Image (cartoon, rainbow, N blue to C red):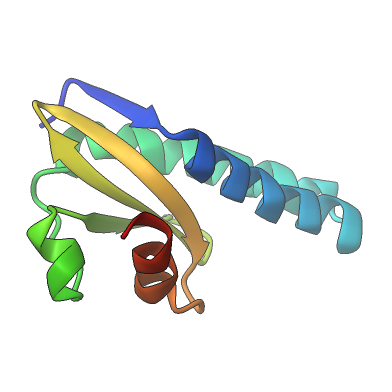
Length: 108
């Protein structure tokens, strides 16, 4: 268990971009609201499971302690790591993206 979850500016901006796309491009405010709610559920579940989820497959990212958590109801995920009992969410991606390579290029 962790004591706190902190979402980075990048992760929040990425999430906002997905929600904005669904809201404006797909004209589906109800779906945008459900994605937002799912993100909050996922954030809150990190308090209980952050340490138990496995590391990412990429060796470089795994060596830095990065993990992922899938949203419960939608095909999105958070990439995060735990440092000093705090889960730091660093990025948000759609599951169909090459998220490990995208994230790796952003941080390394």
